[in-house]
Image (cartoon, rainbow, N blue to C red; front, side, top):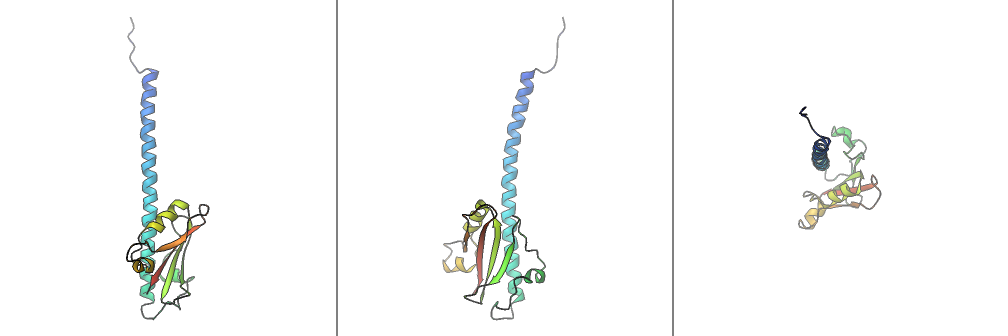
Length: 154
């Protein structure tokens, strides 16, 4: 005589399973977006550093007077990168007309991605006629210990 209306346990489990699948897909997309954003931020920061160093040293023939420890204050930028490591700026000892941007504290996948990127304004990229990315470094260490360095100048 009584007609029950409502949802059965099986229907509720079905809805929860669908929600779980959607959530897992969303988490994957968010993770990929965050990874891409960090790589974009590193690229933008390196371009900004290179531009500012070149502007500060435009009146000199070389970068030998560049002080890597105080240059970040001069360009009003932090030396911290999005991966929890640091940026370093130094003069190439073999050629004072070149300077090196080093990105420290990378995981293996981030290091590999930055090594494969085409740093179009770098010495390595230009010397290879665009066949190599222009970065060197070490990507075989534990996460947080890897680094990439890019040489700029003439």
